[in-house]
Length: 140
Image 1 (cartoon, one colour):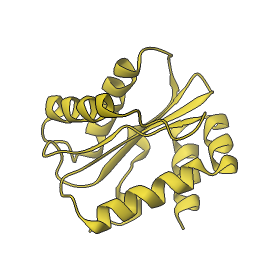
Image 2: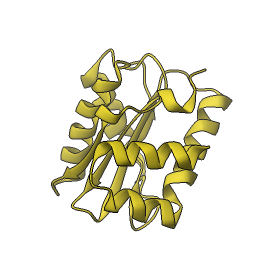
Image 3: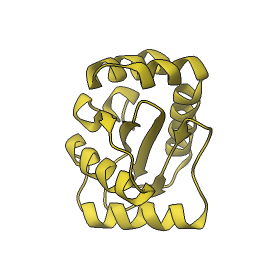
Image 4: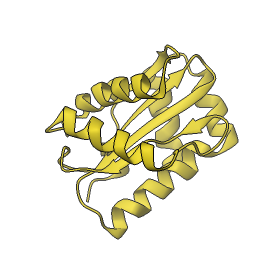
């Protein structure tokens, strides 16, 4: 099992995503996810995330949406994160095997980022490194 600091990289975070459709945002987040070096099939990841999203919205709160899916398009649990127009956080999560540990990691990560103080700090962050550091602190 990967450690929480392996799930996300500074390169898989964007602090200045433009507003667009949910599909455009997810496509951009999948491209960021590739920077974790855990993506084997970008098109499959995107398809699986959009399929999951079509079943039920993954908006957790007014400021957090978490598109996610179990997909064979990744080698292991991985995360990309984008701040859209300094108002909303999109956190894309994909994993290769459905097991208790991955579901536990998913829940822990969502809880940490959805904390109102953490979310406000992430939205206000000036760069990807600052967001990464905030997420790492929230996960400890």
